[in-house]
Length: 244
Length: 123
Image (tube, rainbow over all chains, first blue to last red; front, side, top):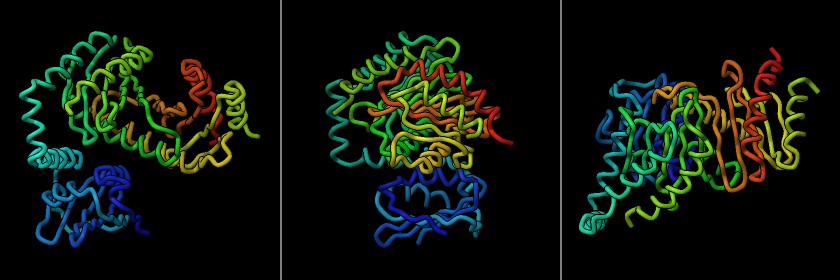
């Protein structure tokens, strides 16, 4: 049986993530206006993608620009070919990065960027705030301001930490949590804390909810109350420092 | 009432008016015991959705080298929703309480009951 829906309700990155998590063979058909693309999954990753004029990972990058359209997901369908070897998470990061770059190429976005540079706003300012935050959190590991596309716009780490990977992975998780809370009508998320045997990972959406503040602290020396308090204080400051 | 349900009932009693909902759920997303004070609360949907969250959380934590997930806490403007793995991680325990609840106390309570719940799961 196929699962069908609208991309605007689920978001294609979430859909890809969930399908990969299922680990089964699956065919994801995407339609927007007159365009159609099909992604094939096998053993938890994307192995093939095809559209009217091309195949392979370029098709994945192309459809990640689609915010509107319909999808149909059918499990148990083996891939007819294997044209993609890149891990799905890397495909997502690259695809979303390309989408982001395309957006910045529009005249309006360029104008905003120029104005920000002229006024000396961001990113130094936000990085300074994050650096200050690092001094307030016991067991501090890393912090970042991240967009809902999983890309960080400012970050600070205490050591050699792959902040980019943390940003991408935690965004996927947060979006799934946000979707679950929304469907259950359990209110609006103020923060999300993941506790592991090694670390505390905290996410707090900024006021526009298009970005969030993420903080990672060591499990042994970290303090949940402190992290939540500081995330509130600094999220407010970072919201004000965001470029308009 | 089996032992698992008795333990969940005790938790519910200890939380009093702050209690909203609780379930012990397998990683297949199916609840094996639980209850809610909210009449139209969709326990089936909540169990299934948070099973996906816990699976993804475990995967994410492993990928970013942050170890094994112990629990997940969502704070909304209406509730605290805490989910934590039990035993070998094949089940998790979800608990929702109102924002009036004392979060530290809820976490402590979950620490106290987690092992008992794991042992009470029928095998």
